[in-house]
Image (tube, rainbow, N blue to C red; front, top):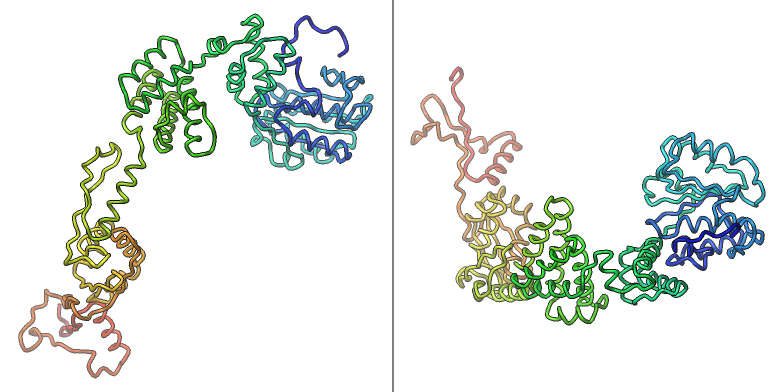
Length: 550
């Protein structure tokens, strides 16, 4: 670097990557850009997206060096020529960096970009515009930039970096090659921190490095800054205790003790561990996050999707994946209540003590209920559910034994079936109460209706009826519908107005009966009435009143 180096330089700037090979945790981005530079297949606009501190602006500067290095375009800039040194120090005249967070207006875009983009580079091969936090530009600024990005001069290259890509207009994003930067995994972060500590001759515990990597949450810049802070506080040595003390991490013993109390549903022990949390001044949110992270590792191990710390595996060896999943959901809910509540201590206590209610294996309940269902399906009774304490969040109703006289072989009880239908569809259940039924060899039923109207309604609800029957019988069964026949109840519906008095031997005084279905010249009318009688049942009679009658 040109000029005299400062007396002290923070580690985040001192160890900023200067080449694609030094980028940490972004192999896809570095490989693609390297191939583009080596093959001279360059684009005029790039959009770098991803979380903070993962290398977007650093990669933009490396790309600018690759474009303007005296040996370039090259994927391996020398770092010694004037363009490389000036770009690294942000002093190159042909690489313009614009902070969109503080220059959001259209006038800023016009002054920095639009009025200078047509000018040839002062010295280098390309004029590179790096727009950091591009999503902060106003709509008018984006509109002013659109035409320039759409048809730029051949010597201009635009690199937009943003943490919120959804705020970048589609008209801008569609004209850029998009590269997605991902959070750096804890393992590469810890290795990178170890390499820096070795160069700086700082003694760091391996567990402390993993704590710093976890605290950085995928940000390489944050991880290096945390190491720098710990080095300053520890006078050249970084220990697990110093890291925990500085950043408020919860001790492993405290987390293990609370986890055991939750698993064993020991409220007294849990209260003791919470007292230690308060005495040590641990933030409730940090305690819940650390506890959740540790239990999550064991949960994934139980599922065969990962490996947990041996101490945690041993402490929760008797737990099951179902029970740990329940605990994780309760911890998530406690964190949400902690975020929006005004009493962190109360939210912490309610979240943990409520988890004691059912923080146990739910698989045994499922197996027990499945066994009971199989016994009922076979026509036998089952053990009372009161043999074990009922879950506080569920209500289980014991099923009555199936009478042998009314149950189909391997089927279900007709009264229970009608009752189940009535709970969902009251009208349909009332119709079934009046129907006759016959048992089929496979355990299903033939249901006989007295009216075509009722049969059609049941046909429209066939899927619902067969599902209700399968739920009772424990296996799929078919239903058949028939009109009339042996055992079908007689039709009881009479569509004659009951308000009209019926005189034996004839029609009421002043009126006369006429059966229009007998000898009617209009066969269509007769057929329609016959069909109505078949649908509604009963006998259709038409009363004709004398002319002028009321």
